[in-house]
Length: 275
Image (cartoon, rainbow, N blue to C red):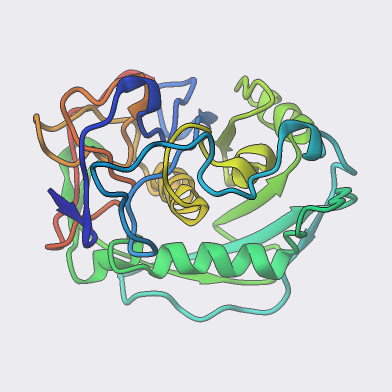
């Protein structure tokens, strides 16, 4: 099967893709995720004969190299980004990075760099901005021909704030909303998406994909929660897994996928799953 131009092959459950494993059942509440990566338009798939490596790229930092705590306050990317897509509902989002991160030898993720990465994910051919060309109808969340456009803004008046933070800060802020992120996971609560620095830098050890693909998976999944989607199950054996599926808990016969849409513009859906 090809998704986003990539050939996908089945993988063992020990190395399956995950975009989230949220602790609560409704998207309005706090939700934690276990990000992994999967196919996107940004790199080529491994051939069936490729051997999985211990990390998405040879330069993935170890746990010891990744700061676990910082200031607990944030710096927001300034200015406004371009409008992504032509969907009917405009989503205004801000992008922030925690202050005081001791990057050491790790290339720093400043707010502008983090913002550019998110914009790339949202604007990708099978990203959420594709909804303008392929509106989403989903009775379970009361959506009828829904579509979205996105714009990053530098003000505090936003629909959602995406924050990159150290594990302890993620644990503290997500924990205040009742979500246990265990030092490694990300979460969405209220109007805030918290991205765990450890997972952002490491991706999924043991899963042979690029770090860019991991970034696409976690951003698409958490924005999906913001747009109103809870978790989903596999829609059928051999089909691409919904981006809202907790795929490390089992693919249920689906193929790994981190995009909300597949190549023909089809929104990938499945039955609702308890979280």
